[in-house]
Length: 271
Image: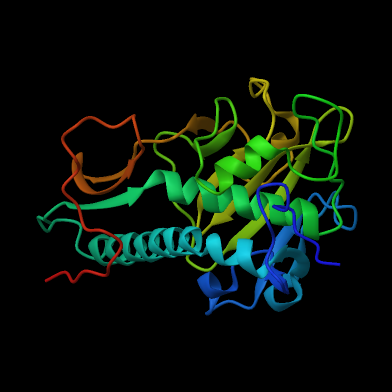
C-alpha cells in the first residue's frame, strides 16, 4: 500500500517514492545535517547523513508536483551563498566604494518548500506526528495545510514562515545546515526550525499566535532573543552605514506594485 501524506488532496500515483526528507539536491556539497527535537535527539543535536534521511511518505505523483518548491529553495541557497561570497570579498577592502547589489526571491514558493520539509520531518523521522489544528489530533497534516503546501491557497496567519533575526546580527559560516522540532505543552509539534548557512527560519504549524517567549528556542544555540518576522520583506547588509547588498522577498498580495529590481537567483561577478 502506498503511503502518502497528500493522499487526501486527490488521487495518488502508482509508485511509492523514497522521499528525501531534506531535499538532497540542495546540499550536494554536504553529506550531513544537524537535527534536534525528535524522540532520538530531544536534548542534543545529532549529526545525520542526508542520504539516510529518506522515508516512504509520498507517492510519485504528489512528489513530482512539489518539485517547483525544490527549485525555489535552490534559488534561495544560490543567493545566500553569493551574498556570503560578496561579504567576504568586501570585508577584505573595507574602504573601497562598492555598488550595492539586490537580489529578488519569490517568497511563496520558498514558504511552500519549508512547509513540505516540515511535514516530511514530522511524518518521516519518527517524531510525534499529532497535528492539533482545528479538531482532534491526527497522524497526517490537516487538509488545509496540505492544500496550501501544494499552492491551492496561502497559509492563514499565524501559520507560515518566519525569519528569526536581530538588528545587527551577522550571518554564520557557509556549510552549516540544521533543523529541529518544537513541541507544545502537550508534546504535539508546534513548529520546525531551520538554520541555513547562518540564516534562521521557523515554520509555525499552529492556528494560535506564537508565544512572546517561545521557551524551547531559548535552549537552541544562538536563537535566544531573536525576533520572529512573518513573511520578511528584506535582509540587508551595510558597510560604513551604506547599503552593500540586500535580499528582497516578494509575497503575493503583500509587496507594493513596483517590483524590486534585483538579480534573480543567479551568480554574479564583482569587479
